[in-house]
Image 1: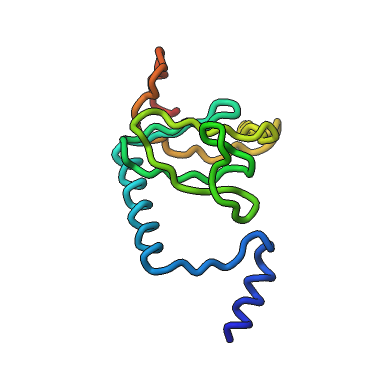
Image 2: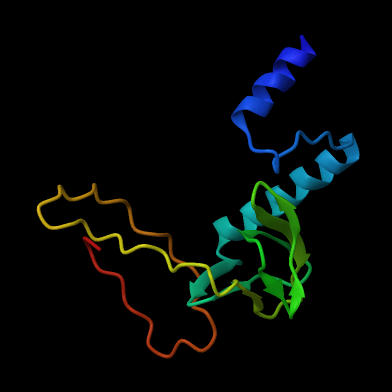
Length: 147
């Protein structure tokens, strides 16, 4: 039975996405970190944004920050994360100051979300929740109804 499950897994996932079997203590740590991160996002204590080839994360001191990024991404000039499924991911502690992750030069910018001419418009989603304005922003854009 287990061989069948593993064979199906191997058929669905690439070789660089092996089955992992963490210890119970590792699972507990992972779940606690995720809960803390989710709570910080919900309360507006943590925020992240990308400008060009840089991802900046602001979070309270001591909070562990998760990131999954393209292979070749760096944190303070050193390789970031552990490889898995063609990406790198990991947790890094916040010192309470902006944390800057640098993407490899080959990482494309997010695609423009505007629909092509003649294409049906995408459904409008709810506005993003209010959050802290990152340091250095001098003119925040006020939200308005319908945006």
